[in-house]
Image 1: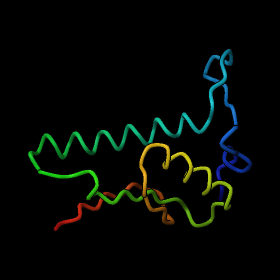
Image 2: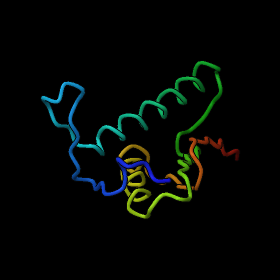
Image 3: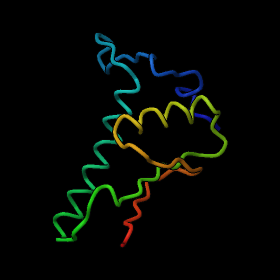
Length: 101
């Protein structure tokens, strides 16, 4: 089932904040969520003392296969604003694959 809120969203869709007084671009909201998890993962890797180059990280954003193409496209566009070259798959999680030389 596609979440109702994603059925007809585009990169120009505006959503209201919790007070209903201010509108925000929906793709920016999703962009910030994706960026948060990206930064969290990079900080965790750094704290553990693991050497990495971000260019060697394959970011994978997965969404349910049942989602419509417009919903998948919306998530793709949001992720591309944060992470260039990510891959989209079906299911709901973010998977990090550290590539080795």
